[in-house]
Length: 258
Image (tube, rainbow, N blue to C red; front, top):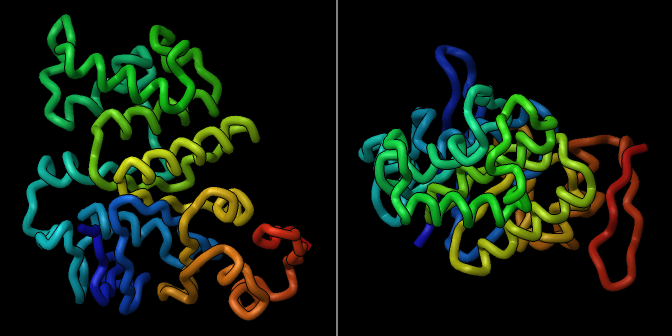
């Protein structure tokens, strides 16, 4: 069971393709991190997998079904997607915003004055998973940028999808909450979700992900464990001499800017 791009070439309008002949399978129970320079197609690949950007050639399969043939609601129930840029509705309370995700998953109609028990449970689990239970009754307009980001992640988790696609979910989070979020994603994968996360933090990815996928110029340049991917032969063509690898006994090397 997997969400898989099969030889996908994709882009926007009449511009040259952003992705070229990409093969990538996200299996349930696996946590993958997508890495690479800016503008190399990471966000586009997430949108293609979510069925939001059409393939020019190739296809995306969701457990054997063509994503392009599925309706938007059917996709949303199976694939949770959090883009990098989100403009939340600041008039909502936190629990109301997260309940939107539960509604997408079909847990009743949240516009009713009282949420269904199933929806309330989904909201509670999602908020707890990102350490935001205490924010439930706060207004979105009272939160810090990092707190809002955690709530947005919770709103996707409330869908309780089979696959989770996250674009820079740790942006604006402090070190404690970055580690907590990635530990949560790791735990979700252990419980059977397929998780694919875009991040620029190589060290965070190496600490928690099962596999790293390195994207370069719209193609998969490397995929594997952290020790395999975080290697001079893979990183130098992408970043030149602007990084340093620090060896760590018993762990993947750390990547530092230079």
